[in-house]
Amino acid sequence: MSDQAASRLVHEIRNQLAVAVANVEAFRDGVLEPTPARLTIVLDALEQLENLLREIPSERSS
Amino acid sequence: MAQTPSRTVLLVDDEIAVMDVLERYLRDDGFNVVCAADGPAALEMFARHSPDLVLLDINLPGLPGTEVLRRMRSERDVPIIMLTGRIEEIDRVVGLELGADDYVGKPFSPREVVARVRSVLRRSERSEAPASSSERRVGAITIDTVAHEVRVDGKPVTLTPTQFKILDVLSSHVNQTLTREQLLERVSADGDVFDRTLDRHIANLRARIEPNPASPRHIVTVFGVGYKMIDSA
Image (cartoon, rainbow over all chains, first blue to last red; front, side, top):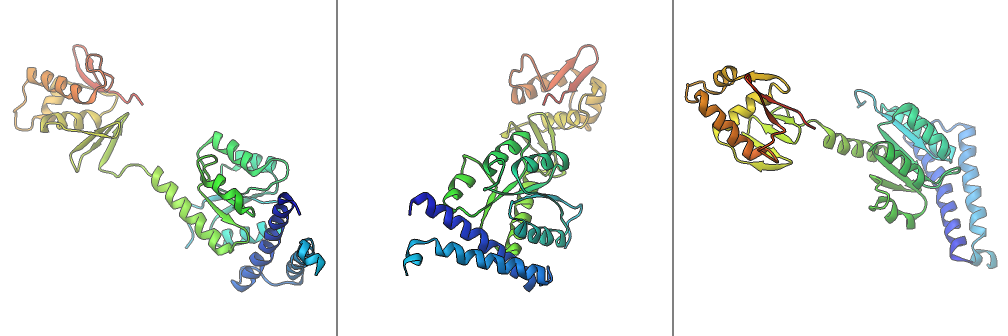
């Protein structure tokens, strides 16, 4: 895996983590309601994370 | 604790699910929030709403965040906090090259972002705040009437009490001609400054505060009348 590809991957992982973390913190702080639509956003982000992890070579071969 | 008056934050991120969370936190904290999801929209919102601070994702469609920052800064010196998922960018972002005021790495805690926004605003408002009420600024000259200090281009100059009084009186009537009589009356409460010595005091004062005393820019002579202090800034 090239450095550039690895860097892009890390960036995307951070972005999806940001979605999950920001939303869950908002639920905890009572700033947003954990509505089904909001929870779906978090679940989608987690699913994306799982897909991104599969792109890491060592993950693919294991 | 809401801010008064309300500050406007421009929030720029192409990840809507992050942006709307930040928007809620900032609104709950008393900020006005305007949002943009790409570079060109960010510049348009910047021109339209004149935000007090910009929260800017570095990775934007349309126009890179770094270029958006550069263009905003060429308009005016607005505080900018970068949001970035690229740790390797951070040095460049907060370094001299781009000069963002702060950065927040992704993922971030929205509360932490609000705290950074407040802290950067405080810092920039402090540096813009007008000098304390005992200080008066006329062009390059700062007069502190409490500490009895005078600075020219930030450098302290030493004045005699009479010179200080003359400068104090003239600088509180900027762009207004004061006659010799008016100056003498205000400067010389105990009658120790006489008509001709006033001219000498002015000459000495000019020698201390004028870049070129032979052709004064701050304290000018109004022939046949008196003197006037000019804000040449």
